[in-house]
Image (cartoon, rainbow, N blue to C red; front, side, top):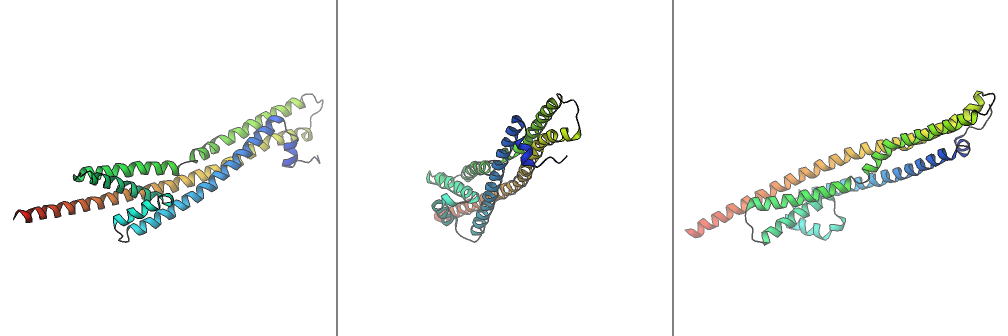
Length: 238
């Protein structure tokens, strides 16, 4: 009864199949933690860049100045700034083609911003599917190692004339280690996935709100320009 039942000893004496399962789970766990850490800092940076641009956007800076700044800092811009730049770029391209219809201009800018929004969301959601897969599959991989280990243990016990708890315990413990490591890999992945999914939903709502607010600003500018043109035309007619 004084056998060494530490995890290291159990793994060293486990069957090859259990050792391979444990090795696979350890690799998956390391990759999962790496994805969690990268995603944490990526979303933190994304939120900070969005907040910085939103403050600048509502500070009274002209749209042309904001667009010029966004074009110069495109490589280091946040999602909201890139969406703004996409809308302004399409808006200006249509104006350069002498398109004056307000509906056409707004539709073009909104389509460009929606396409940019989708690209930003695809980038934000990268690695989430990996975390979801780890969270759902790892316990079953560990369970497979446990079942295999128990089968191996009972096959070895079949040749013994007398079986006691001291002879059964090591084999069962070796097998259960695989399930424990499977849960160790799955739990952080599930927690990370749920947290990041909520954060990405908040970012998506903020970006969609910005698209609507910016569209309203463009519409007001177009309405003001149209009214000014009408007044100028009426004045020149007199």
